[in-house]
Image (cartoon, rainbow, N blue to C red):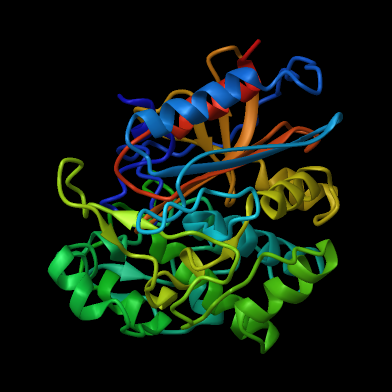
Length: 388
């Protein structure tokens, strides 16, 4: 399996980390071998991997690393194919499914406050929402949502949704359409479950749309409000936002490009879109420095009590991806050198992103490709944590 498929997934399956087929779910926890100590200027392998991505066809790459030596950034290529403006370490971009780590963090904070339990059913909070074609919210717990063992179908794999939003013609017609969470869930419920809850694993954006709705039901505020006040503001993430239905990217930031699933096809500028098509499964905008700060703080124990962080890091197996396991909005990945990183990926049209961190949160990388058809973000992660 290509590394890009294993780590980041096929961008044609918008917002997914399509790691592969389902597996029988079994909880476990990896102990992480520490990453090797590196000098402050020892990022040459990472820089080479970034440049290789541009050579492979990515228009532009930006990466920022935080480690005990400080902060290091690199860019390559262009941020705007029309003007030739280069990429910048300060570029803001759509982070896609890395939004899920933010959502899971808020739900775990609510559990720590005694306001909900991960063993609550979806139906307890959203009675009657998940019904039809064998889907039943009375049988799905919040934990099953967060670790993708619910069996709920993935709305972004619905053929009508894909035709409307993941093809060039459909995107032109529908890029500014607003979709509500209820509409996204209804799309998923056109289909039978992938499996009985808790018996297997399959990545489904629907899980996190429902999770966002539960945050709103429990708190009386939108998931965006809760993420902002619980995570973004306390950490001072000034480049991070939840745009709602705002179609443009804030500055500074380049453009985003897609070939709509055909690597050899024409390149389209897809920067402007209504991110409600992703909602709480993938709408966040951020930059690499903010993502480093967020994942570092999360893994360093600044956002969750020890019990909840341990729950987040309790993982399930993914068939066909022996080096990757999924926790609650967070993945444990064993790299080729044996180092374990906690990571998440994020694909949305025109944007491919990854964040990865050591278990203590002291060594963190975040990167973005402003495209969805070329390059190997896995190679950049490997270079940073395994390179000489």
